[in-house]
Length: 287
Ligand SMILES: Cc1cc2nc3c(=O)[nH]c(=O)nc-3n(C[C@H](O)[C@H](O)[C@H](O)COP(=O)(O)O)c2cc1C
Image (cartoon, rainbow, N blue to C red; front, side, top):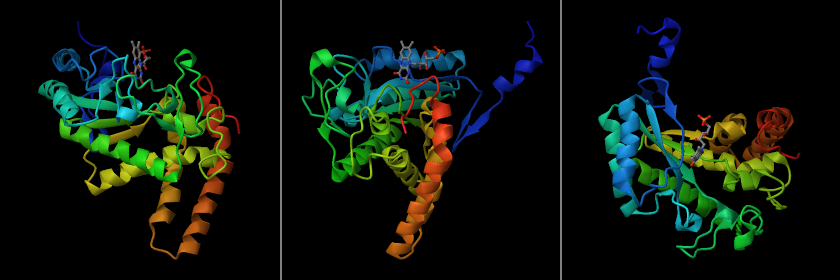
């Protein structure tokens, strides 16, 4: 049966950052139970999707570090070289069918069970998890050094993703993962520059995305990177241009500080309404 021409656009290639999707069908991140532990099944399953025509095939949520160990649930993992080798099979299968492979980077802070790694995750406020109250999960309060360390963990996981052969990296902000724990007042009780106003609570996710973008730029944008859109962070990220532009310019320290504050004040004024609108139906931010 001939295809109705009104659907032709779905089959046209589209550029996504430095990569090109061969059509507009995107398999969003979703769990299978295969994770990194069952590399053969994982590779064959995702490869079958590529063979069936999806231009982008993503993993399930993918833990970036043992501090976000999801065991007893099965996530993908990018903790070390072993995970790189395991997930490389997935990428090879997907590429065999001319599709792009995506991975969803995930750090779950206070909600991480860590039953295998026995690590204590870090988060904004050192609170018990309301998602798994029966398991007595909690996070340690991250100071600014910890925040830099966590951002570094994400960047290193993205590097490992690239080594495995992934084309796209999604930095998840859904499911009350760490970026949302900073954004939401119910989790974020901080009084420093990462807490309080919306601009302060957004700082972590903005810095996280800026770190990925900077790293990507250094490597001439080898990976496509996106922040999770359905929670509206894309409304915030463009502001990053303004903040980061001033931050990177070689000015005197005082000038630079004033420019950042002006950009952030603008973000607060202009975006509060839009962000709430973007979050309608999702998680509402208190202001
Ligand atoms: C079994 C299952 C597992 C999922 N796992 C993830 C996940 O790991 N990460 C994620 O961001 N979304 C996950 N999702 C959400 C899906 O990616 C998708 O956004 C959602 O199912 C809505 O799309 P749909 O209307 O086509 O089902 C999952 C959904 C299902 C049904």
